[in-house]
Length: 218
Length: 218
DNA sequence: CTTTGTGAAATCCTTCACAGCG
DNA sequence: CGCTGTGAAGGATTTCACAAAG
Image (cartoon, rainbow over all chains, first blue to last red):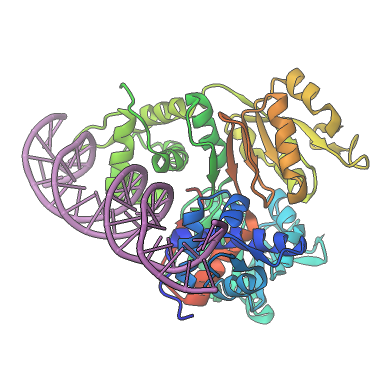
């Protein structure tokens, strides 16, 4: 029960397990073995067992893990018990699509505000939200109780936007801009770069070589 | 010059270096040190040097690397010299945004076809392309000379779609569906899961713990 | 004097293999 | 017997630290 330190690689797999477990539950499955979970997640079963052992959540020898119990445990460890409010900065093609993406809200992430620097976009409606001017970022973040941001601006604006986000009190940023930026200690950043992923595939295509199943969440 | 085997972790960083190098070149920079590149990419400089050493591309001691030369070298290694043609399967919010995303074409990936199983979407226009029925996937892939696919369907359809893509001759799949699937030997898959990324951030938020800058491209 | 290239050390991660529980 | 939990082995990756090159 008392969870030890969880390695990064394990943390990155927990959401995958969670997804597989929810699917299993929808199929009325009450228990699941490390092997079943491993298959669904595309990893090795010893890896699953070791990962889960970090949570202190114990399975039953000869049986497997209780699906419902594991879902609760992983949700708790991932901090998904509280709803997270998110601002999307930059409502270009990608930002607009993310604003409407229901996968976020399904998993407890509420897109509470949209912000853009372009006066032509301010005031337009995306989904059920009106785009706010970038200049009012701090106010919006405070008013809406936002702690997460999705950064979907051009690369050139990334550092500036990140600075403003941190100033405004945002503590986690999911960065879709193809650029690196620095943030203060304690602010968490993850980067998703869509063309990078295709370029990596391109390498293995060109080589014709092995790595075949690759999660992009390391 | 004779490139040895390139480790996976290095491959995942090459596109990041490439991006930084192109930016440097736009700023009229002729050479760049491992330290400069490391800063721009958000990694350790020894890491940069080791990575580049795998390419056999040599820098100049006391000076650094020629920007233009390195761009060529990395582009070649990543197989970006040839244009890749891509089909997007699933034109929901995400698929449509990806279809219009100009970052792909800027980097040599041409979205050549859109496909969807929903008859209401078939025939609609996204960007400059007409959505084709899923049933004509094989024909479209053959006609358009497509080798890459972006899978942006619901999770429940992922395995089926992947099977059809592989049948049709696609050899690299970028998977946005939150599901794992199996493919034949030699077909390369990378997974991008948007809510997973937020959930990982959520973990570190909840813990208040260290990992601060994290690339999502392992 | 600056900066690369790289052995060696340190760290992290995965997989094996099996004792032991249910 | 089946399946978990985990020590130990094996890989992979990162970082250090420094000799050598320009």
